Image (cartoon, rainbow, N blue to C red; front, side):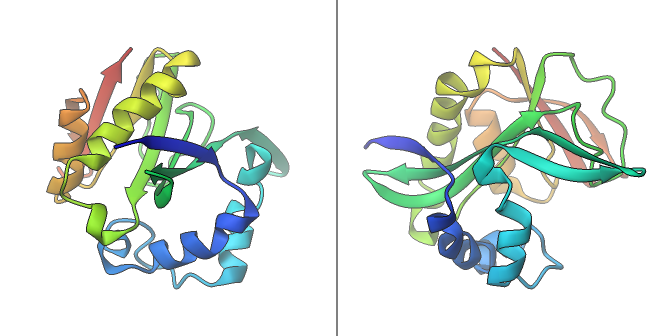
Length: 178
């Protein structure tokens, strides 16, 4: 089994559209969004250039975003991205300033259903952390939905530890140190 990571390109956008609309991904990732090719382009267009652009008050900000397609034996099976945990206002609205200074945040999913539930996700996480994330950061933060037991188990298998629960226990904060 060979797990590799290819930088995201525009050629991957049809895969992202397919995966983001797949029921097993949709239940945890952008649930309220009906993804279209235009929305994929709008969200991920800058990621292929290595940054995320957002508006903060009246100023446009660009911060590094590292986005990859996960492949197993050369077959694209999922998506993973990481960035500084301190660069972006958190979508859930909670404060993350007490996270360690050198800390990445990470989001990912296995898009192809036949590759879920087999330990591939936790293995892909471990490889990505070693090859990419820990070259730039000392810690990695994730915040899965507490009800997403598959994600929690994958993170635990990849060495993440629960540090607290927020939003009335609905979100589990997990951290892994290099």
